Length: 299
Length: 329
Image 1 (cartoon, each protein chain N blue to C red):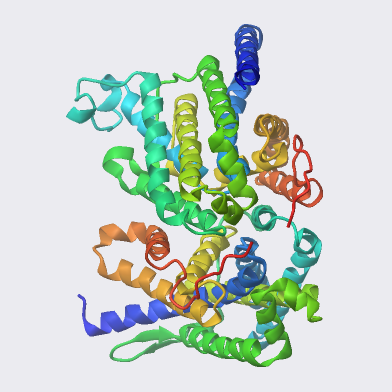
Image 2 (image 1 turned 90 degrees about the vertical axis):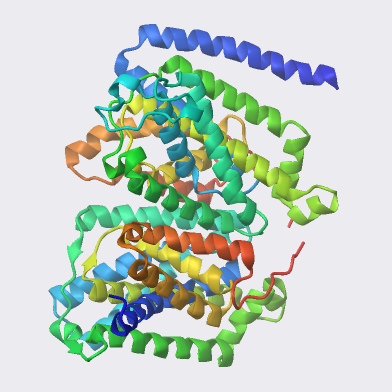
């Protein structure tokens, strides 16, 4: 039963899920690094992105390339709206106010979706070119798996370059390091934070599309656990660290899939629990995460 | 000093007597539907008061209250379930160290046991997480909620899985509920107005400064988290013996979200805020229920709760009962 092919197959499933977590974690870690905000609304963007692609790709049949750009734009726009409507007003206040507001936005969007699209899950029938099956002696996979892995690697690489090389990326790191000093240096804080929200939300909406195409089912509450798990990935990888978010995401995806694949079937019901057990374990053993630096204490 | 301390206790005594009279009148004069709503208000008030200790006074943002309620609900139900009905409802008999198969617990100790188990769970989850700064507790306690509901679903031999437990005897009445509300308000008030409470407030305002003054934050954080969990557990037990049926999915994120919303709207870190918040939101829910059912738009109440939360956060973050106080940065 546990042959090499099975191991490879499950590893690949884990990597695909891990890529999705990693993309979500990227957006979360940048926002957390700057604002110390666990953005629960990030999860809602997954749901919104998934339904957005469902309506334009599956219902209207808009070509894939156009869909990708539209969903990225849609997610970015939503992120910008959330930032301008709410988060900007709360900056400078207690950190917990941001957290509570994001919780409110998550619940708002979830129930809005529940009212608009019905509480029943939708079947996401991806176009046939995304679901073509390839069989090799060890692995069976579909185009969408390759697409997710390829797109994720490309996005992560671009994101890495963006953070390291561009002026905006350097400004983000500066703000994450010290908001006040960055502001004194003439960085427009609000603009940079908006960009962080836009990028993160665009990626979250995009992962909603990936999730739908890969798992074939979308529902109004799909984003909640996925979003929270993405934050677990952030903590596992190391808060505020961009490579850490990627590593954390992949580790979490692999742990989730491999634990269900190799433990007796009785344990498969504990799948969601395992992720949070990992969180508590990491917080116990290495609170700064795999790639994180120990957070200094500021008064 | 003693003289100042005596007066508020006297007020609690007077308030308790007035409450008793009020509850007695409500029980005899109001119809069953209104009493039902009053009991629900009481139960939610207990949870909100207890969440206030953790989230409001100590500044830890826990999102695991539904999990503690679940622990309390299941524990007290399993302890107090009548022996005669256990077989019919596929519930296990008590093991010998809990009194043996011939015994089922009275209501009050069963509630306390549920609360204590919830506190022990809070200590276990708090020990690794509360050492850290930042809002790790929010995510870890949310994760804890997922773990608890997973266990409630999978331990079929004890909890009957997703079917839940039905036919729970309805021990909860308006007197029990308001007795526990009174106890929880008194305990929280007593903690907050003591050395412990001042340490908690200091941690909320500035943990580093508190440490510099010789306060060991971990001790106070754990205490407030565990006491909060105790009353959440008790409220869970009351809830189970009130609705007469519990299922794992009831103790979900939305339950936590409701309690958090009640606390925020009432005002975090105030004595009366949690009760005002809980009572007004329950009233709102029952006022909106006919609308939701009439228009067949499910999710409307949640949507309104979320909108209220956002509006309060943006324009009156101190809540209805809160006073705006200037913070030093």
